[in-house]
Length: 139
Ligand code: TYD
Image (cartoon, rainbow, N blue to C red):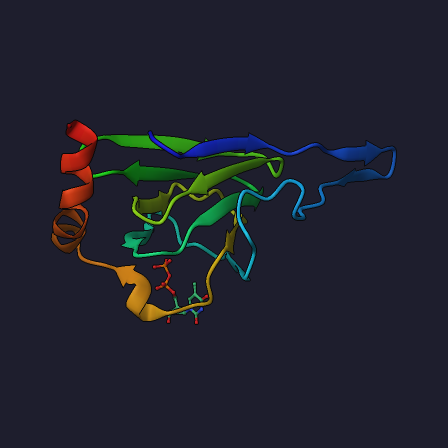
């Protein structure tokens, strides 16, 4: 799907364990905010929105979960099951996070501050909002 990137971060590991640094040399966006989801209840779906401007990098730092991405025409599901995997999700994709393993922690790195007005939480509104972009893609 266009502009989605599945990144693999280098792991600094030794006999004490592993460490992954994220900074401007390997982040695919300019970080303004980090948040993380945990204690996800079984069978719960989170996300269920697109954004008007906020790009995000999703990393399941503990456990695993799946992310459904939808551009209004195609859908794709990505499994995040390792702290060295990062999924770059551009603002205009509808996303749903589900299948959280017990104890999973899903971290999001965002390039904007939190703003509820940046969210499109209704699927039909999402289809309408990005209709022009899809028409251009088809041409
Ligand atoms: P919400 O957007 O409902 O989570 P999801 O991505 O699963 O749809 O966020 C849950 C609550 O947390 C909601 O009241 C808004 C608040 N929130 C913040 O205050 N700051 C943030 O950066 C985020 C992502 C959420």
